[in-house]
Image (tube, rainbow, N blue to C red; front, side):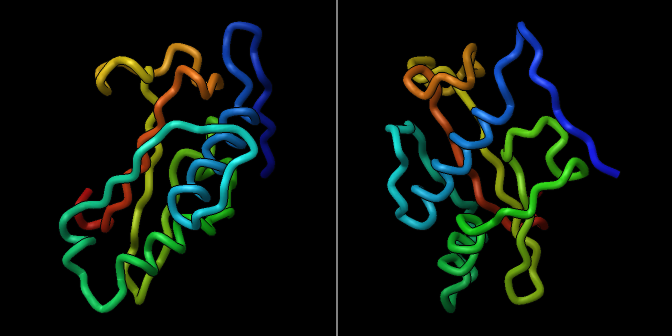
Length: 129
């Protein structure tokens, strides 16, 4: 079953947010520079850092390369969540969007504006959820 997300006049265009989220994820995880500046931070959980033996590096690289978005795992069309398998372990990643000057207290008012939106990419072991 295929669904197409239609932009609404009072809502930002999901395809713009998806492209910005993808660009930020590729910058944070793979070092690929975006076409335009994108503000953000990447965080990983303690258990992911403590996994050892290059597991963290594999998880970060797989997060950056993720491109399997379907309506079932991306209902808003924002490309803001995914799950990857590393050595039989499920790793989740999530991008949250905040107002850039709010100290991460408020969600982005205009999430498709990279000048006012701060992205936070969190990567964690599924069992940490």
